[in-house]
Length: 402
Image (cartoon, rainbow, N blue to C red; front, top):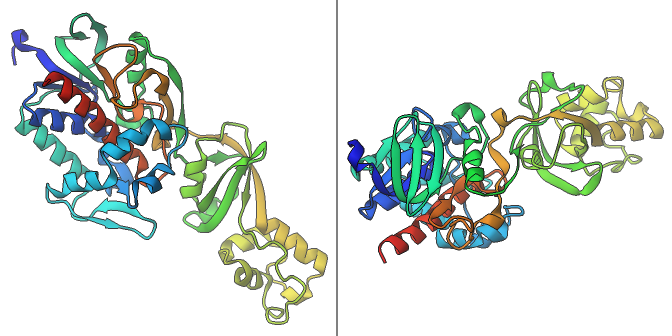
């Protein structure tokens, strides 16, 4: 494409989930589409989602999905109804992809990897002559009649723009928050981005030797506000706390916050009537009562672990349950490099929820993680990226082909 023809119907800034999907849909309508991405390859973050397996969405009715988004749920509602989880599965099913659900309702491609889904989108773009410009930094975006996009080597003109640069999560993939600067240049407010869906590093961590052990049905809460909590499974790693409950809770926890984790709700359960378990070791007796892993119990009640349950006094039994039922931690930190999603981004108040068009600049649209929307772990954030992209594309097509 020579310098005289760098004029497009739609320029998409960002070649990730939302950007590739937008380009594939727009190009099918014979529109002239450009993708600009500062990475040297497209879909880098999408390719590693779900450890490469891609938890693309979650099963269930739309109302079930909507319960798993936070403050942005009302903003997202129209987009999810326009392009639901069923619509997303149907889109890829037409490309030969089948899906399976795990016991928690998470949906994965059965015969494709995450990278395989990326390749489907890229091939659709290439087939429809989308102009792809990778390894390119945008210096400036100006709006007159059309948009003028200035890079280090080229100037592009476009009737419409979709900003789909992502947030700052998994920053090693090139998701560095550069889209926020471009949005600010065009007059948009940015809600402070913070890491979400990430492990939590805590001070004086003592569970490194329990790496790989998980505990079901824990409750994690902020000590300063008990109303902020999450329930679910916890995973110990070599260096931090992880697992679905911790990942979901991480959006609320800041450095130096004090948090509490309840490992079992059966505190003091039946402690005085132990004829059946009286001959058992303390570890075995507790394991039978609580279903907690024995290695975890041993870790916390080491001084009692080799004793028989019946040999403990009532006071000692209460002490044991105190130790294994709840612990307090001080958060040392969390990082964008391990975050699956960003909390924060372009303010929802600056975007029309029914079209994803900017309220500040006509013809400018936003989709995906660059917007201040986030959801729980389970495919909800990828679903939001596809749904908001569809909404933006639908509005653009209606206006350009009117």
